[in-house]
Length: 227
Picture 1 (cartoon, rainbow, N blue to C red):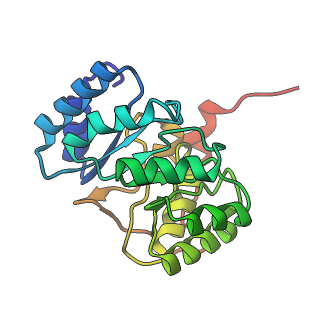
Picture 2: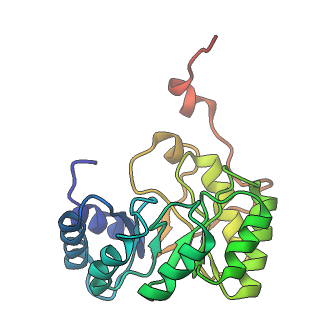
Picture 3: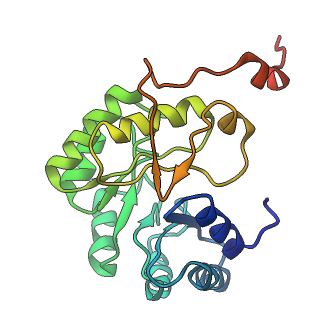
């Protein structure tokens, strides 16, 4: 439920089988610190926790915001600044903060991914199969990332068909890295791709395609007529 506190939501996700966790920051320095403190209290100091700023900080303020949160040992800082900031700005931020940086959901075209990866500021790259390239394009990004020592962690936030595609994409490149599964309730994800998480892992079906076959009766109530 959206009424849950962040610590409660993290603990509930742990019970559901998840072993790595990500939460949003950028709601003000004090609120971000309190949320991270609450999550660490719920999950422990050793838990894998990422933070996502959703391009929320200006380059001038990002180092201070990151510095405040590094005491809680985030595994990565996702999109701390705007995706279209110049490469040199991203490089400076990574160099001056020393923080592990993740980005990619708002990058388009293989040339731009290649430029970002070769620039050396990314520790994690996150293309999205629904935003650009599909499985084929994002797989090329993953292969290049592996070549350059950057972890490949595809981004996903949406329904079940895309989630299944994203999970197969991640699985195709081996075990290293993470696949993203939204913790918020989403009937079109849960009905279409009802894959249980067991101790941080999802076992994918070996059926053709992306392995999900949506039941028309399950999704009937979400159909709308357009004109």
